[in-house]
Image 1: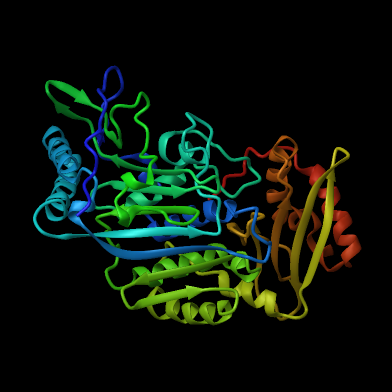
Image 2 (image 1 turned 60 degrees about the vertical axis):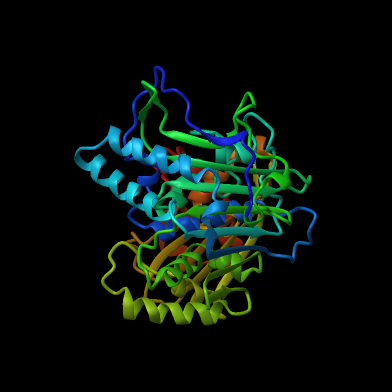
Length: 450
C-alpha cells in the first residue's frame, strides 16, 4: 500500500471576495450534449499537437483510453475529498444544485469508503513531449491544462488552445475529480489532482469550489515533482501524459467503447489515414484499435453500427464514411500548393475535390492542419454536386500565422460559394481562384468553431 506524504493534500482556498459557485460549471456543461465527441476531440487535438519533435515524421502519436480499477488507498486524499463533497452538499442542499450534489455525494460514499476499487478512465498519450513547463507559473502546456483558466497557450495554428476543452473529461467523473501525471522530454515529472465542486463552508469561512491536490508547504501549491512521491499506479514511466478520470461514469454502460471509437473516427480519420495518429480503446477484454492499416475496416463497421443502433440520434451524424469514399474514389483531385500572403510564405494548403454526375451530395469538410474536423458545410444551392476536403497546413511561426490560419480554415467553403458553377475547371485555374478568393474574406466575425 502506497503512503502519500503528509505535505501533499487537497487544498481549497478561502473564497474571500470571489463569487460563490454552484454545481453548474459552464465549461463542463458545454460538452454535456455530446460527451464522447467532446472527450475524443479535446483530448486528441492536444495529443496530435504534442508530437515529440525528436521522432521521425513517420512515427505516429498514440492515444489510449482504458477503464482501470485503482485501490482506494492509492487515491490521493480520498477521505478529505469525500469530506469536502459532503460539505458542498450541505451548503447547496436545495433545488437543482442540491439534487446534483446528492448524486456526487452518493458517488463519493460509494467509491471513497470501505474496501473497494475505484473505476478510473485512464487516458494516455505516447510519442509526445509531455506537458512541458511543469514549474512555470503561466504560459506553459502544464499550466494551461491544470492551473490556468481562460488562458490560451497555443497559437491558432494548433488544433486547440487549452481553453474550454480541459473540462471535457469532467463529464465522466462521478466525483468531479481528475488527476494529471506527466513526464516531459526534459525528464521533468509532475502529478496533480483537480476537483471542480461548489462553494462550501468550513471553520466559519466560505471556500473556493476548485481544489488542488498539491504541496501545502509551497507558495504556489505546487504539483508533486518527485516521481518517487507518486503512487506507482499514477507514475508516468515514459515521456507523455496520463489523465485519470476518477469514479468513471459511462453515459451508456454497454456502448461507451463504441461511442468513443465513432467519435475518434469522425473527428480524426484523416490524421489516422495519414499515419499521424493511432488510438486504442479498452474495457477489460473488449478492445478496439484504430490505425492507418485498419481504418477502412473500422469505418465500414461503425457505419453499419450507427445505422443499426443510432438511427434515431439527432445530436450526432457520422459523416466520416462519405469522406472516406471520396479518398478511395480514383477520380478525386488533390490540389496542393504553397500560399503567400503579403509577400510572405504561409506554408501549404491542400484541397481534395470530387465532382461528377453520380456524386449526390454538396458538402465541404473543413479540417485543421493536424487532421481534425472543424465542421461540415452542406448549405449550397449551386446546380451541381461535389464533395470536398479543405485542409490547411500552415507553418508554426506564430507571429505570422495566427491570422492567416483563420482565413485559410474559412476558405474551404468560401471558394465554393465564390466559384460556384466553375468548380470543374482545371487544377491550375483552381489554385489561381483559391489564391484570389482569400482576398475576398474581409472579416472572421461570423466564423465560430464547433
